[in-house]
Length: 431
Image 1 (spheres, rainbow, N blue to C red):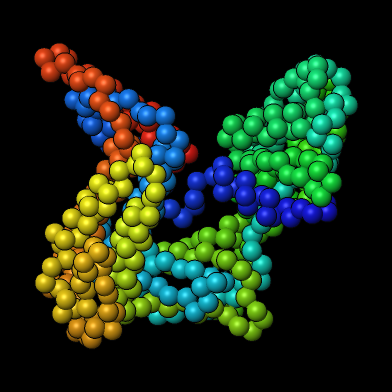
Image 2 (tube, rainbow, N blue to C red):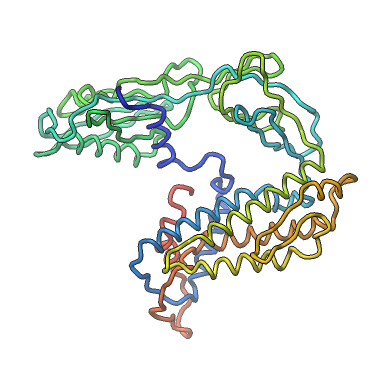
């Protein structure tokens, strides 16, 4: 396969079609989704009807700012929740974060001070890469109906499609890619070209590793119900380019395997394997003390706020009211970042927060000081509320003239999807 990296192609498709695994805000309970619906309905209950201007740049900026708000909320998730009222929640640290990252998820005092982990290999997914075909040439198969079967996770699925007069190889490959992605059965598909311009269909499993007693994640075969055979072999849908393997690693010298590169150790440490370690150079996982944890959490809070403000300030689209968003975000900081300069945290004239970690560490020798913890905790919660507001209706920052006001004397039936209609597939693949 000259000029193609299977893993790079798969990673591109995965980032396109699959929600981010580590984003806490992408994990929803049923009650949380009901609250989202109720919030949307409440917003639209008495809201006027707007007309959205045909400004693609402004619409793209609205979707982008929503995603940046979601990212900020993910950063705030471990800081502004009710369980973590001191900003001193224990956190874990990895001596080699490029190889292994860790998050402390324990709810009580840790019984583990530190441990070592050596990574032999990462868990990989299965990838099938088909034949490279000339994209503009007609499909060398009879016109008619076709079908193939996919066996995955103990289930069998049949995919049906048609080849019509004039269809090229690329037309059908693209059709199969869309068909597989829309099915939502744990497969990710996409197109890839080689140096000669020929195209192939790449199909990968969204899950890594293999289950006990199995060698593959999925299998593609011809369907007996197909009117025309040989489509699987023609496109090479069953050709395996990468077999799935489990991760192999050792904890304090004891060998382990995992079908995923992310797992929990002792219900305290959420481990993510990033790369194999060098022989004889294990990664040390430990727990930070309270002052170090406080300093790290405050740094994360301030960096998240400053980066979000910078991203909003740098929007150039004339149809996007970034000054409104920037001023609202600055106002949150102005209301909470007061009187804590002595702890190394201050607000400058541009609305950014300056931070001196050593000064805060010196003030935290005997434990997290309430004088800085309480204002920052309230600041984090206020930012979370703002990110929720932006995610529900990012289009409030786009120029949108009022078209009509609702009848104040009429019924108040909500129009729950008006907001999401204009917000760039608001929760497109997250719910």
